[in-house]
Length: 469
Image (tube, rainbow, N blue to C red; front, side, top):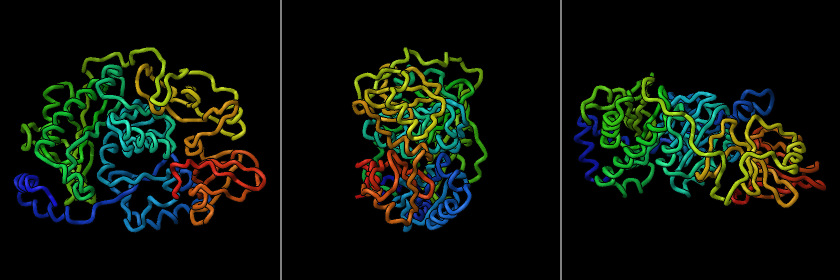
């Protein structure tokens, strides 16, 4: 049931459109998925049975393209793609269509420095990573520790190697990374009005006081985002709410505080324009975007594309502090160091060639960080890049993240999505397999995880926390 004060407010704002808006909120919620180009492009374009099987499996979801995201699709909710092995393999991310708009408007490019400032649970971060194609530096930050852990898991599942996952307050990043990033996304915490038909709790927790509190918090986060953006860079601010106080009002106040910013309006004919008359009347607000559930197939969203003018005062662009590291999961790391011999030997056994990067060790865990690794002294780092292996005494055990990134290995166990052995593997069971040593398990060409073969048996190394039973 919608809050009465919310209905009164929207009736006054929308007037003749209000009944259409209300009817849209009574319809089933929009559902969507976004293909992961880091993993599926090879499978979809490969020759032979793998490609045909992959495309057939996707067709069972009854996909309809999302106009504003080339890799985005609406799907039939009854097909439940979250239970399919391709989801475990990171072939796609479940994300409702409107939520795909902010990262599309950000338009990140390979080789850039990009910050997703409020990144959990990871939908927009993983979308950005797909567009960056593994090149450049992606920093994914989340203030709340539990949500940051979910973010790190999704970055791992989608096989992203060039991402740092941080658990920091935006103000800390503003102090440390002044003028450093080419693009910044602020998908701000909000009152969640656009999610009323998706989450009952969003409606139950709503109040005018919550709207006002969110607007104050959004202003603080936007100021931090402005500080870390370089002159000429692009900042996208987005919410999943309808309230003008959190949308046009927040942007109008930001432009008054930061006159070196201006609005941009990329070509996006699917979205309605913002409403200057719902804020201070500034014509610049007409260049913002509103996504209405009664006008498109998606939930409620707002987005503003902001550019820091080229003549803005330039910061150094170099983070301050020496290049040492601190992890939330270990007291200190050893910083950039050569990989230990057991890890090097393991990579040779697996037949995996690593891309360019910085080798980093956190306790017993070894990572390959992006080549342009910034100094991270004192910051809470959950993932400094691609996890390679864990050292256990004198042995190295390959990380699950390495399997999801690699796609290829010297020894592979290839399964199909409909093969009962695939479900058995995801349940943690052993499989019959003739081979020896570490083996990459794949479903229709998509990597799922590791097994270790010996005496005709493939011992299961799929992480216990991810198993379906």
